[in-house]
Length: 250
Image 1 (tube, rainbow, N blue to C red):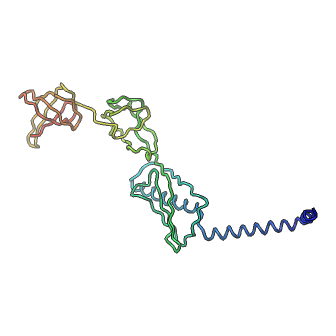
Image 2: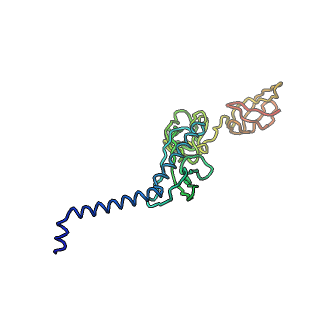
Image 3: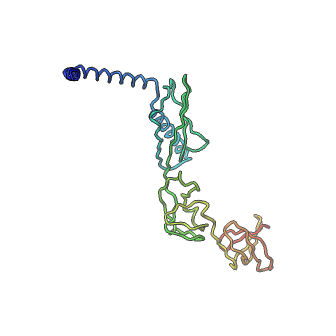
C-alpha cells in the first residue's frame, strides 16, 4: 500500500519515464526506417512504372482510351534492406501493360532482393454493343448496334469499335441486349441466295465478259459458290463479289 501511495505522489517521475520510453521507440522506428524499405515505396515504384508504360503505348497509338491503375497492397510486415541505388521495375512476361499484371521490383545494389507486386490496369474504350437481344443468324443493321464504354482488358475474346466492320454481318450465336460484339460472333451475311439471278463476270484486264447466271448456293462476299451459266447451261465455281454479282477466273 505504501509503495503504491509513494508512486502516486510523484506524477512527474512517471511522465518522465513515459517520455523516455516514447523517445526510445521513436529512435528505434527511425533507425529501422533508415535501414529498411517501406512497402509503400515499392507500390509507388510499381505505379510509376505502369503509368509511364501505359503513357508510352498511348503515345505510340498502340492503345487507346482512358486508364486506371490499381496496385495491390503489400504485407506491412515486409522488411527489406534499404536499396542504395534506384529501384529497378520490370513487367513480368512479354505483354502489354493491360489487365492483371505482375511487376518485379528489385534492388541490384549492395544488398540485392526482389519482390513481385501484382497490379491491374483497366483500359476503358467505347465499343460496339447490341442495342437489343438478337437471335443467332440475325443480319446486323444500324438499329441493332450502339456504343458503350467497357474495360477492354476484360474482353478476352476481343472487341469492335468501327460500325463499318459490323454492318452487313450476321450473328453466329445469340446476343443479349448491351452485349459487346466480338469478331468471333460475326460472319458475313449472304448477299446471294440460291435461285437468285446473277451477273457472271470474267476478265483479265484487257478483256471482260459478262453473262447471265443463276446461283445454285447461298453466298457471302468472297465465298465460292456454284453458278449455272444460263447461256451455255454449264455449272461453274464463282466468287461472290456483291449482291447479284459473281466472278469467275478466265
